[in-house]
Image (cartoon, rainbow, N blue to C red; front, side):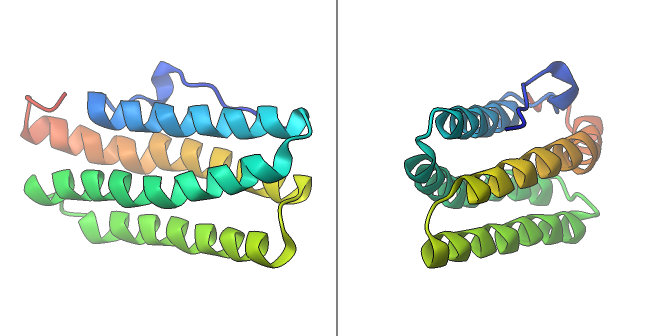
Length: 139
């Protein structure tokens, strides 16, 4: 199963947000390890549950900071977050319908790695560069 490791290229320079991103990457690594050790079904359930909670608090935190700093592309960024939630709901339906499987775990893993590297590396970086330029106290 594919893996992703935290490195500075994923940092947006805001401790709270970087810590939340690191937590997501750790959970993704836990999923990959569990599948490799044939503990996939429990890991899939745990990961999906975590992601549902994570998206609520993390996206709210990001969007709150963007709103407070009048980020001009907030609606676009919210749409990216909503797209993530839609895919997550679909994966959750697959889990509820078909149960946990190595295939589903692999789908979740691949989706998250792709989404994380693209979203953090591009969309989030753009947001935080803007926010840093408006407010030097963001850390």
